[in-house]
View 1 (cartoon, helix red, strand yellow):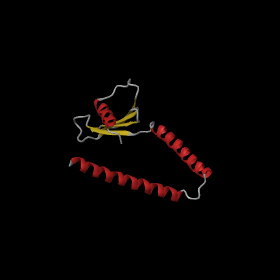
View 2 (tube, rainbow, N blue to C red):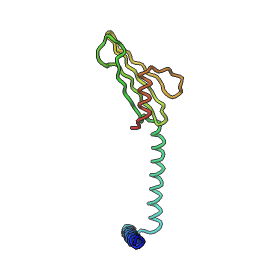
View 3 (spheres, rainbow, N blue to C red):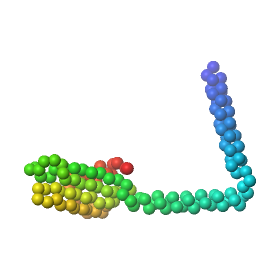
View 4 (tube, rainbow, N blue to C red):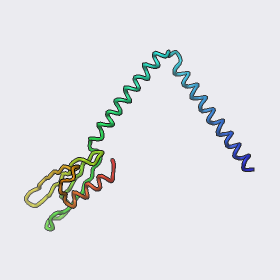
Length: 138
């Protein structure tokens, strides 16, 4: 009994796939009607040029900022609110910068640090921003 059901399902599947392939072949013949081999080669070479360009864009894109994270914090006990922040901006290989703003009563200071060589000492907030950015790809 199970074998008969399996064979029926297999037959229906085979007919469905055959029908879809027949429709694709018919559509291909319709859209390529009147096109000779030289024209087809020219069209396909255009696709190769597009593919090369897309590969170059994709390779270049790895060096653009792709990951980011913002951590807000309060570095001074006497001030209210989390008005200071650390912003991590990283590329595909987790290299980039951290921008930290420390907001105080008298002044606001902004610092930047380069991430990627492992030689820079980071504050806890900066470490948290970098860690969050490396986990989430946007």
